Length: 118
Image (cartoon, rainbow, N blue to C red):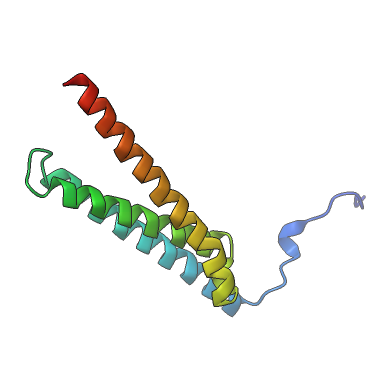
C-alpha cells in the first residue's frame, strides 16, 4: 500500500541536467577560489617570520585577503552577487567601514596596552 503522507523531495527537481551541471560548476569554482586564497594566506604565513621587516605588510595583506574572502562569501552564498551593483555596495561598504573601525580600535587599544606595560 502506498502512503500519501510521505513527500519525496528528491523527485521534485525543477531544473534540467544542464542547469545542474552549471550549478555544480559554480560550486567548484567558489570552492577553488576560496581554497586558493586560503592557500596563499597559509603559504605567506608559513614563510614570513614575525621578526621579519615585512611582518606589518603581511598583516595588512592578511586583513585585505580576509575582507575579500568575506565579501566573496556574502556575494555568493547570500546571493547578493545576483543583485544590482548599487545594492551590493549598500551592503558591502558598511561592512568594510565597520571592519576598518574594529581594526582601528584594535590598534589604538593595543598601543595603549603596550605603552602602559613599558
